[in-house]
Image (cartoon, rainbow, N blue to C red; front, side, top):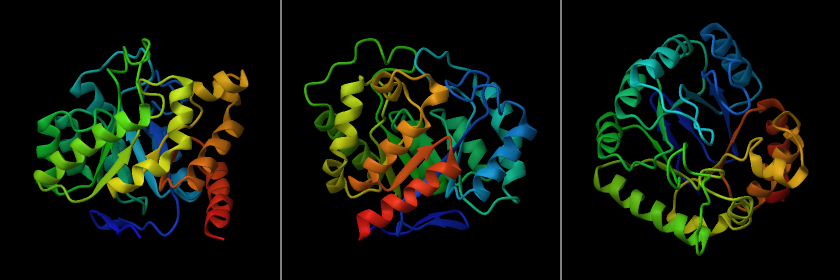
Length: 275
């Protein structure tokens, strides 16, 4: 049984699969770009996701879709700061800040974010220092390359083995710095082909001996489109299938756009797994 993780005054209990709701305060995310770029709309959407059963709200101010361009720290903070400030007293679920920039992470923790979700997998030592200083949980994700280049012919000999090796090293680095609460994310879609993503979902149990909660984010991603031939707006059913399989194979947190629908699928998958 995984231990409870404290996120400031709130906590995450792993007696069920947790649902992380995605809040992209960006103009260019692959699915919901521009929808929640307005802070008021973002805040309302976060409240609705919490009402629909989200256990975590993951707030990001820079798109990490394949080919995306980075934005400045100042711009990223301008996008996310008002949202975190407002939500801190209005929702009763932890907020994570989806960023690889230490300064952005630090400012958002000061404003009320309780988790750092780093797509760069804590490869920046300054990010490790920030997480250790504020004693916040971290999500270490695997990514091959950068969002701009990650889908340029990614190659692995054994995708799960290589991801696991990377995560193992980063967990050790984090623990050495005093970071106690670590969640791992194999990074579906981040420098992986469709076959790589399928192998990750199929072999999630291989990550269990790292002794950290496992998160996956297959929501509406291109591998679902490659399998079904469907546009991003038509990939909900594929997402539901992917998260259900992930739950049966040992995942602890699913990161999704469609909280209400995914929460219902999670409840059924959990019931089957625990029967």
